[in-house]
Image (cartoon, rainbow over all chains, first blue to last red; front, side, top):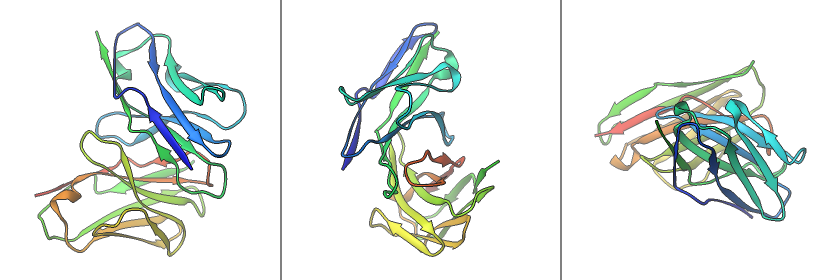
Length: 114
Length: 112
């Protein structure tokens, strides 16, 4: 069994300040973990993925996430927010081969103030 | 490179009318295919997934159905739409279980 909890439904930051979007997971296996971004009325775009290699994962647009097994967390960070980062973010856990169903978090809406 | 197409982009349909949404993938073979629905301001709900031609698994009982007539084609259908079928429909694919998914641009369905 697996589950994902995104701890904040909304996060509000000022442009140029750091971003932290929190994600905790639960999995019976060593999972693959992903972060996706969705802008209004668009499909989801992969930001980054963790697949049991380096625990600090760098993604597109300056985002990165750190896999912490002891804390079962996979938080998404960015040093400096840009107005274009305003979007919905989804954390996803996917078990290794044999299961076809990834589990999505409920999403975190990132609001960026000028 | 791989691409995924969905059409139409937007659709407004009356209650009780039929529905057909199409998704096609290019540049890959035998992908796992997925249909999701996203209600306004909410997360993603998995509707159907397919691991091969003619193989469809349903995750949520509803008045929708899915078919996979060709390797890279996935169709979402309904015989009679309900108001509750309104939402943003997303198709996705991935190469193997456990890998990342790639999403299409989505179809905005409004049932009136």
